Length: 364
Ligand code: PLP
Ligand code: COI
Image (cartoon, rainbow, N blue to C red; front, side, top):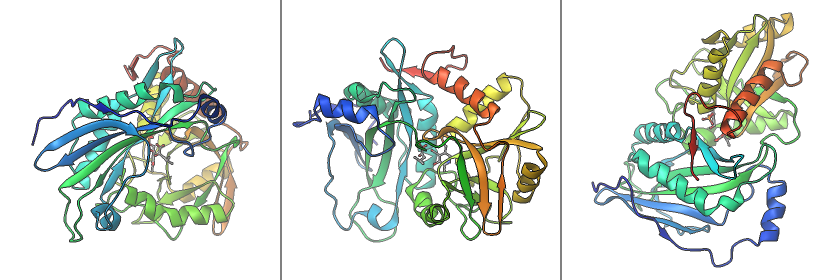
């Protein structure tokens, strides 16, 4: 394999980029995931050449052969992280090395090639430098980056591909749950997300494909997100469709489901646990059963529950529903501990507070 730790990126400018006026309008109220910046990064991989052909090119459609392996067997992984505007006008990423590591762990699980961390970081630097004008200047705004890799070999036999395409697209982002002070969850009884030995800890598209019917059910039931229980006992709370979950008790302690291969090891999760420990809080990574959750919410032993992830940041959970139950948490509004942890995290991410763990990765 060629040693391509750092490749030179070719640059091809977009012939018709979005106008300044239209971009300003889009950035004033970006929502999540609808608007795409003008350029994307593309890098190719083949078994013979390793990583090669790195470029920043105009955002636009790809031409894919109908026999392309990803269209059949879903050999695909992705990441999600945000570029934040710093107070001095620069920009930073938050713990991108952790995304690089998780990307490679996902790649290993999906029989895909690893990408050198330096190349992954260089790809992020290239896209953010190119699209620096796409970072919204609104409170809570960021440029969401979506690195992903898929099997691009044209072959319909079932085997790991030998050719891959890696892309990074960028999308200005505001809040994920627009206008929601807290969210309502739907407990999936029929569908599970991941089983022991499966791909739950990998950020592969297939996990999301299989979660969509449960998310559809949640929406039909008037809920924001689905919460999954474990696949073995159908009892232990695992995570939401696209976020981890945490619980806060009356003694001030925090609990979250342990990483055991069936949930995504969230970088927000890890960061919040660290900040909570820094603040002297008791933190447990332990299983929590749905029946206990109901009982603790009803007795008041449970004070708060919140979702956490790159897209959702920290979002309080006000209500939980299932086929034959419904319970509320605290006063159903944003919890005090959730708000404090969120503001501590966001202050570090945006360069407004000291960064004792070296999490902020300045790009320029
Ligand atoms: N769990 C799932 C299923 C997710 O999709 C995400 C989002 O990436 C997370 C948890 C949170 O991970 P992170 O905090 O790294 O964004
Ligand atoms: C993220 O937070 O980056 C995710 O991938 C979750 C998804 C719901 C957008």
